[in-house]
Image (tube, rainbow, N blue to C red):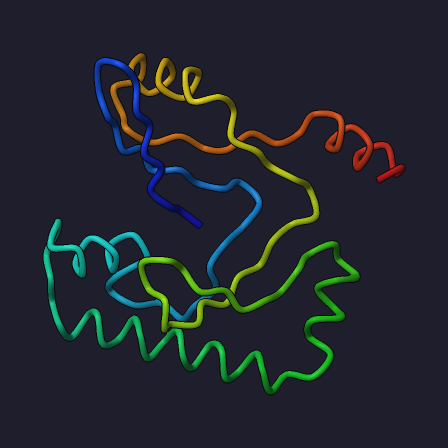
Length: 142
């Protein structure tokens, strides 16, 4: 799952694509993924109506199919995953089915994100997994 994160400093404003290493959007395969869908709707990328339509239909069918699968949420919960419906701020009327793993992730301070993206030259950053939670999970305590 990705989202835009705006960082403002004294010298500049930078939009960073933030991704979660423990949360995913579930859908059937289509020509557009979530990021391409967002870019197309924002006018920043190729906007092919048939691809946008297919993405929307696939998201709705995924939502309906998972909604009809009784017990699927409990099965995922037993595996330490949370299966839920979310609405993205930039797609407020489109239900997105997400799966989240039970480890928390977090955004480090903006200055660290700025330094990392400046060093890499890529305006994207993946949230970090909490090391203590990971250790507890791996040791069976979490």
